[in-house]
Image (cartoon, rainbow, N blue to C red; front, top):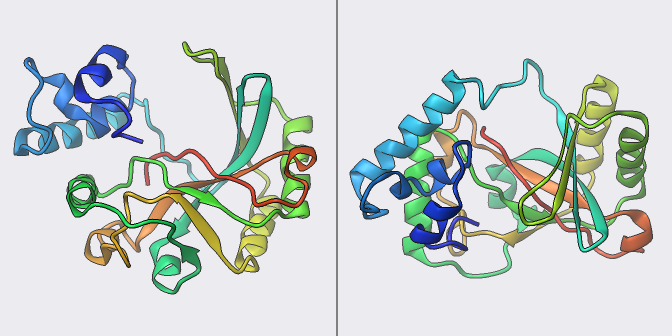
Length: 232
């Protein structure tokens, strides 16, 4: 999450293509600017636009799911990167787990309103599903990853694009039958609800989110965890 690092730490850690330039744009100023200032919010929009113009962020021509794998301390977890709709939260299909601070909510909402996109992850958990596990395993076994690298912290990251339309459609059908998702990190959502006016500005209110499925041998019927996100 954006608030794990303070501004000084973020400035030191950020590389040229780090998302920190979009989610913590105060680091682009010297000295570091007030993170709630208008110039900082404007810089976030400028950086987001520049990333797309440079081809660092690319919109897929068709809707797709992605398989994401993260390896740390010798353990690999697999998941799906997907989009959810804020209306599922309003209707109670996405369960909140904590109360959040209004000042944090409003700061993130300003970024969403200005950028017309949700740049940061929304983390979910959902009940284990054997068919999703099988789909993920098949994608990983029979396809080369689009990205495969080890970060400076030693954690490994891999990403597969699911291009088969039938597979993508089936994943959508499976999630339609899952009764509820559970928010693991929800600073984006308001206490007791959401910020619907900001979300409706996202062209229908979709949030890019990620659902992470642990390998079946690890899960053993427990609720899986969720990770990752990209731009809307």
